[in-house]
Length: 105
Ligand SMILES: [Zn+2]
Image (cartoon, rainbow, N blue to C red; front, top):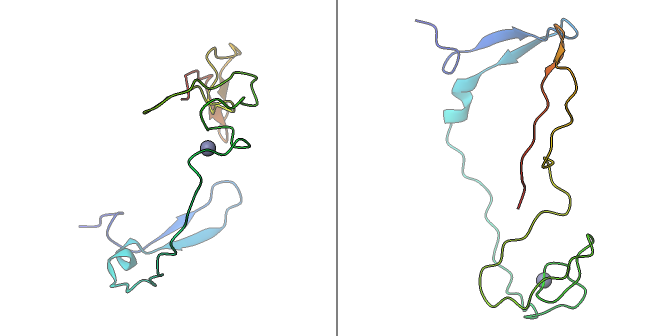
C-alpha cells in the first residue's frame, strides 16, 4: 500500500503547476557525515558589548539584572506579539491566514 512518507511520488506545486519528485526513502541511506575537530575557545565571562550579558542594556532599552543563574527575558524581536492585530481572516485558495499572538522569551 502506498505511503507518502515512505514511497517516491510526484507532487504538483499548486502555485505554478510544476512537478517535483519527492523520494522520502532516500533519507534512510547511510551517511557518514563530515566531522570537524572542536576548536578550543576562550570566551570572556562578561562582554560589555553583548546585549545578553548581565547588566547590559538591550536594544529595547531594558537593562538586564545582575543575574547569577538562568535568566529569561522577553525577546526584543519576537516572532509573535502579545496582542494579535484583529483583522479579518484571509481565506483564499492560495492564502489562508488567521491573526496570532503570543509571547517570545
Ligand atoms: Zn553576553
